Length: 264
Image (tube, rainbow, N blue to C red; front, side, top):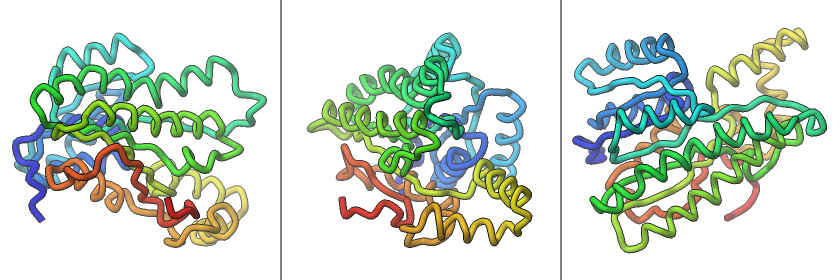
């Protein structure tokens, strides 16, 4: 399917690996020009090499930025003043007992997971409205709806993204600009692979046994009963980035394998 993305420019934050890398790859396959982002030049260069090897004629560049550093973000915005598609994917997570999460950690999680998207959207949304076309997509998580007891700070930031996204969408009424949130479930990525590997080593089980135990005990409501692939999530996000998805606006759209046990 031609998603009519040729000639569009996209910025995908946190895109040197995982879902972000998958989104960048899919957008490039559909003819968009893409700016990828990571915290270090080394990771960006590795990702650029992989993308250019996979899609030799693609138009892709990278920019190193730490979204906990407002100066770094400002530099990014000055370098890439305008984009057609903004994918707010960058995010951090780590399990920690609620009583041990410090104020500094709460603020750090909020700055990276929430303020990153706010700062970029504040810059790019007015331009999109002026040109009467644009897409902003926040990559949230099922943890924003089912807050994990071991990661309350992470889940809270993912819930906040839902509110920000809907609030921004309200400003696009009557235009060809859309703002949506995508809610992935458990997805196979560098982070989940490490999680499975560590548990397998700790419990002296195979990776397959640990994964089965995870879906039996931790994600028993999953209808998919496996980790989604990054490409499955990325394919949906790429469609949502396209002109074909004009009727999708102000929505929180799930790619969670049916884990969240509600109709709406």
